[in-house]
Amino acid sequence: MLRYEYMPSDFHPLFLFLGEGPDLAALARLLRRFAENPMPTAVAERIPGATSRDALVLTPADDGFGMRDLGGRFAWKLTPWQAERIAERIEILSERDIKSGSEILELGSEGEIPVRVSRGEFTDDFLVTRR
Image 1 (cartoon, one colour):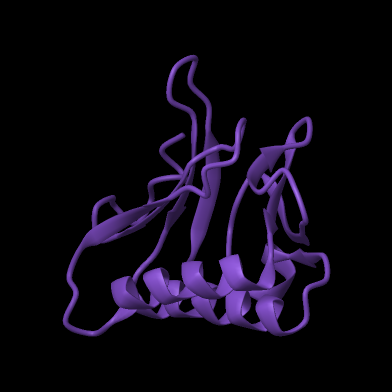
Image 2 (cartoon, rainbow, N blue to C red):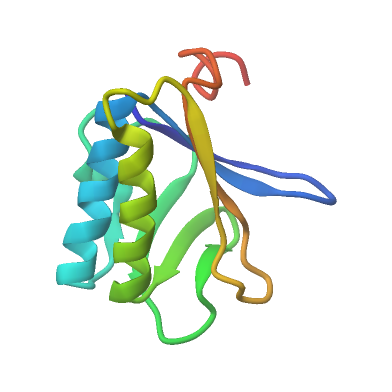
């Protein structure tokens, strides 16, 4: 099950995605579909079984790139090219022989929230029952 949530912090906030290989592969496929047809896309509606307390929408962007807090709901503002590159990095984590690891995804846009995609580094209940 793909889990994702905003992790607030005064100094180093981040948006965290957790899952196993198939979960991360589903996220990468969603990003590739978004790259082919960039339109607002609610992540929870497109990945069956995904769970979060935070609403997240992939959003086409021409400025203000990256993960953005829109007052309690989140927009991951990406160009098609950016979505493709991020999907490539996530696909590496989803490969069968990878047991654990993570990627920090940042686009270098002022004010963006860093995104961490993690496999095998947290228990299955993290972001579900432990918070």
